Every structure is written in structure tokens, then in C-alpha cells.
Length: 368
Ligand code: UD1
Ligand code: UDP
Image 1 (cartoon, rainbow, N blue to C red):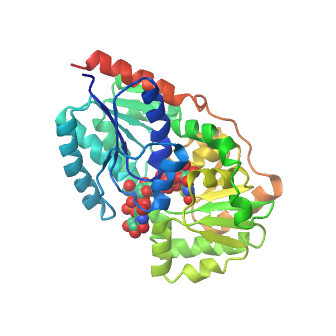
Image 2: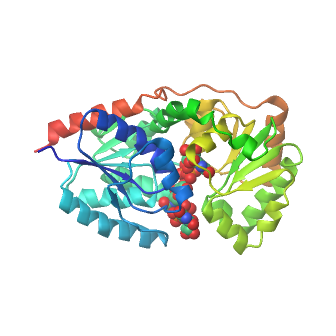
């Protein structure tokens, strides 16, 4: 009997990366196990994505929940190891850079189960970011490193990774974006929130921005200025809401001129909001890529990016969290319409097909 491939999801940015891979492998009649670690668990951080992306309910739910880095990583490892021993998969696929990603890849390495990392090779070169540690560790133990862009290949080569482990497949998140764009445009979300013709979309959740009161307050100061010039829709991440309340900043956010605050929104609504926006202000990794693919100007409120191609080829500008620079860059974009870019090579909506080819070749060459 053919052994199953386990596809791992854990947190919000994983769902839109796994959905097209799941669909492609399923169309090739591969036995699959969809495993959700439960790192994100609220309906609007998890269930809504299964509905919106047409993914089946997870076959296995580990229910890990929130906690410290060590708690999350270690608990996923303990539970995932049991599943691997029971299910004996031919391959495990992990995506992105969240704690669930690194935890499952380490389990595979210790059990000698082949592991493929989708979105390999990205580096911010900032080890204060928890995701950078996850990227480095995952890439050091996974067998197949599937990269979205040439910078990923170069970073891996510079770390001494053998050439045969690196395959550039393109950006799988863009498969989901393209295949859902038309459906997303049917959403009534813009009128539901009373949005004007021209508005900016804002997301924030990096610990460096929202767990640091001074940085958080500085960003809010910049938004107070930007809001006088354009309406802002802010689907607030639960970490951000929790920290804003604990720093007593929540009421100040509510008082930003022209701001519309909501909880996290589902994928189709979010894509609808992003695709019609004049400007994105964000510290999200995924949004830097999606705005590049959509041609929407993006201002990234971080000091660095692990996705430099969105700056060199796309619509992204890195500004950090200096309020003056945020204000100035946003005003420039509103006056000029912002940077135009081009879509990077292999961000073509066919990445999941290339991923399936690579996985199945690897399994047939290395399987028992
Ligand atoms: C995680 C990832 C980050 C990713 C982000 C995407 C790591 C280290 N971080 O950050 O890379 O960009 O997801 O959104 O893996 N919470 C809820 N409900 C939920 C989930 C979280 O209320 O369904 C709250 C909890 O208070 C929790 C906090 O959000 O403590 C942070 O969640 P966590 O998964 O630890 O990290 P994120 O900031 O979401
Ligand atoms: N997203 C969404 N609803 C929201 C905010 C984001 O559907 O309220 C989507 C967004 O389009 C992208 C992904 O979630 O596909 C990015 O996730 P996030 O910003 O949480 O994580 P990161 O990319 O920073 O790791």
C-alpha cells in the first residue's frame, strides 16, 4: 500500500500555502493526511480558512494552542512524533517559518522521515526574529528545500547546503491568491465596513512592533497622521489586540481618525480588501508577497525583510518603525500612487504543480 504524505498546518499563514499543494496531490490520487497542530485555533484564525480555501477538515488535530516558544515547539514535537510513528508517512511537508514548522521538521529528522520545506531559503539575517531561528533550523534538517525566489537558493548555497537539496519552485501562496481572486471580488466586505473608494489596509503582529510599547505607540502616532489623509481598515491580530489592551493603547487606536477596526477577517474577505486598497501598511511576511503580486504599494513596518525580491522587483518599501519615515513614505505613496513593480519569475499560480512533481519524484527515488 502507498504510504501517506503528511501535510502540516499550524498557523494562519500556513493554510493558503498548503491548500493548493493538498489539491494538487489529491488530484494525483496520493494518500494524504492533513495535520493541524492547533497553534492557531480561533475560528477567524483557523476554521474560516478551511471554508474559504475549500480544504477538508484536518484528519488530525493536535490542539496545541498558545504558549511560550519552548512550550509550543516541544508540545508539537511530542505529539507529532507519535503520529509519525503510527502513520509511517512517505514524506512530511512543512511550510513557512512558524513554530509548528520547525517542530515537525526536527521530528522528521530524528525519525529519518523525508521532510520537504516549502518557502525554504528566506533569510532576514535578524536572529532576534523568532521566525529567523525557525527558518535556519528547518532548512538545516529538511531533505528538500523548495524555494520561492533566487535569493533563497543563494542563501542556502552560502550556508553550504548541497545543490541537490535545493529546488526553486516559485511562490505557492500566489497559487491561492490567483485561484481565489475572482471569488474574493464577489465579497461584500468593503460595503459591510462602509469603506470609501480609497482606503489603506493595515496589519500588525510582529513582537518587535506590538510587544514593545514604545515602538507600538510610535506606529500609532504615524497612523494618527495617515488617518487624516486616508481611511484605514485594520483587521487586528489577537496578539496585537492583547498587547494594545495591556499597554492601554487600545483606546488610542480606536481614536485614530478614519480607522475601521475589526478582528481578523477570512481569506476571501481579506484578499478583497487588499486587492482594492490604495496602500498596504504591514509587518506581515505574506502581505509583502501578495501586494507585489497584486501591484498594490506596500509599506513594511520592519527594519528588514526575508523577502527582498518584493523590494527589488515588487511594490514593497521597507521603512522600519520610525514614525516620521512611515508618515513620509505613506504621504509619498498617496501623492504619487506608489512604486510599481513586476511579478517575480515563477510566481505564476503553478507552484503547487511543480511542488507535487518534486515530491513524487523524491518519494519514488528514495521510497522503500
Ligand atoms: C505566529 C507566528 C508568526 C506568524 C503569525 C501569523 C511563530 C513563532 N510565530 O505568530 O511567525 O507571522 O503566527 O499570524 O510561530 N492567539 C489567539 N487566538 C489564536 C491564536 C493566537 O488569541 O487562534 C493569541 C494568543 O494570545 C497568543 C498570541 O495570539 O498567545 C500569539 O500567538 P502565537 O501563535 O504564539 O504567535 P503569533 O504572534 O500568532
Ligand atoms: N490574512 C487574512 N486575514 C487577515 C489577515 C491576513 O486572511 O485578517 C491572510 C493574508 O492575506 C495572508 C496571510 O493571512 O495570506 C498572512 O498571514 P499573517 O500576516 O498572519 O502571517 P505572516 O505572513 O506574517 O507569517
